[in-house]
Length: 375
Image 1 (cartoon, rainbow, N blue to C red):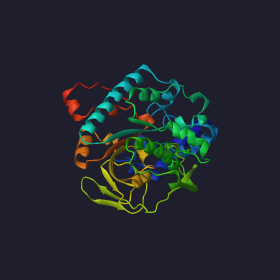
Image 2 (image 1 turned 60 degrees about the horizontal axis):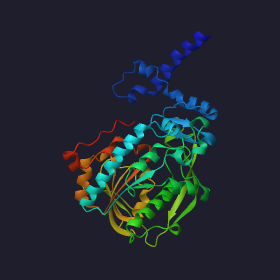
Image 3 (image 1 turned 60 degrees about the vertical axis):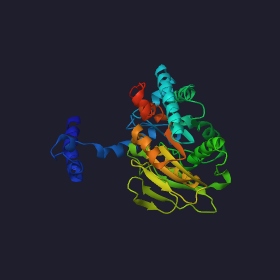
Image 4 (image 1 turned 135 degrees about the horizontal axis):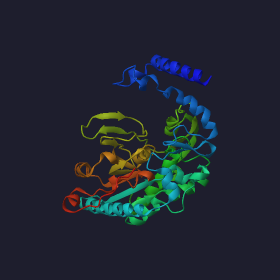
């Protein structure tokens, strides 16, 4: 019977893949190759649906299943599970020292080039804000690598949004992060942005800020699963909550998005979320609270925060920090001439090699320390 079942599978699987035209979707693969004929990807959604209720992930390197259907990022991304469980290490201390010195060097370089304020905002990992839904085997250590990083950077340069988000958990009935996605939602982004703007206002007392009365929760809508659900091939199956935020303003914000290098208008109207840009993207909002220019290096944690930035600052030049090597970073500072430079980085990415890079002139004249390759 077993042999018969195996032979049936060997006959049926190629037929399914050929009928689905798998080879047409993968350049360079012929229909008769084993990777096409015996590709089991079509079965993964069915396997996930079977194992998911039992808390078993079919893709544990990318996602694991917590309590009450909360999904968390797996080990493949920055060794997130190991980092949470083990706490800070000697290597974390060394990396933090390198990043701390590099950040201080950038601060001096930016001040020398007329930038009045430089800040790095940390966007906490979901496990940091919602550890109670982690599996028992993945409970976090008391002292973390992030604590070590913050202890080694110049006071005032980093804005730690963890306390504000932890406090807000008990204030709002709505979640601050998606259950099936790695990111904070619009409410979580607002809580973090408010903590950030209050911090920078201490350095720039004249800044006009959004207040709690300017932002309200309109309701909660249903949406399909997020990026973590996609890893399980359950994006269309799992549901999540979308917290709908309204920014109240006497002067509605209408944004225009331009390719900074060509000047081409890419989009206009409204104040939408802005996905991460791999080319410099200039967002203009003439009715903003402050007529200030911001160079904003960011990752996907800036997506839900973009509307708040557009309300607060009239021009934000946005680019993913991985696309901004030191030379391009310096060139954008010199050509755009921002008032402020901000970086928004998710917690698990804050100790990456990129943040140990020194400004161009310092790199040319000194001997910068080298970070080991961070996962």
